[in-house]
Length: 357
View 1 (tube, rainbow, N blue to C red):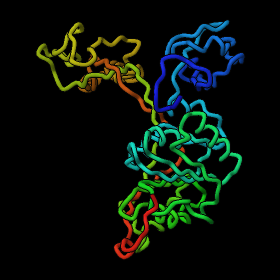
View 2 (cartoon, rainbow, N blue to C red):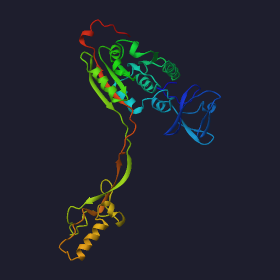
View 3 (cartoon, rainbow, N blue to C red):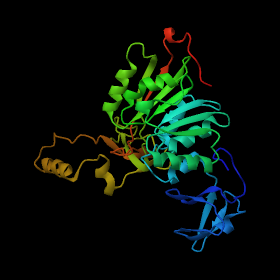
View 4 (cartoon, rainbow, N blue to C red):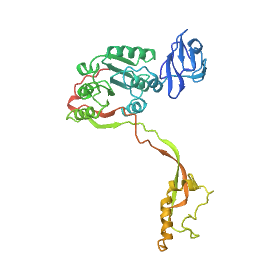
């Protein structure tokens, strides 16, 4: 079973996603006679075999959904060996690198394989990924996962030091992705691996100092890189709430009442929202004179200062009610910066180059 295909029936050896809620999921590899414990009770794998994907599965204390695995769901449920990239960054990377079926890609920093799975799904069925991992144990685990997820024919995991040895191919890749502590020192290796006729580069950095050093390297004369751009992906959630906006008093109404709009009735509807009558309990919150102000006006009148008429309120007794989105005061979820660039080898290096297929 592959992450780029869909099955209707769960089979032995499949990797499936147990959905217990939008913030509660786990991945399970189906094996005969095994049992997986969840907060809704035990899941017996023997009963999973033959079960339809996408339907409920009854547990001892409730039920869950059994879903087909996808790179997006795998990102949420994978075992973390390193910090990973999430869907927001991954979608921008695959878009900006212009990946498509058949693309040849080189990646440095396999890590937990979150981005790798998305790349493999995008370039399948005839594309290929060369991914480099410095840590030997992580490279072995990633290689086993790719094989188990039926991506073995589309990826090769290399255990090597990129800064010392470079990529295992030259003049080969349509796109390069770098995720390592010193990306500026790997730019020349990326240029060697990219096709001389053109390609795209992406470098992920968690701090702006790394971005500055990388951009300086990309901007060097005869580097071959152009269209250099750095972006930051930050997810922002908005809360929906009902707000009441007081209608501005623009002058006397037809009836001569400064406190009335003379235009709207309490039962009339506007295209969005509605006009509602303010109550005394909420008048102070919507712009009417405060109790202290009214007392001061009354005191002036008691003292015989009749020439000092209090000005009309800035708002009328009606308010416009609607639903709106309110953004949070603080934004969480910063992961890092993505630096993109286009590459085309200088004209002098295009003659006599040997292409690795």
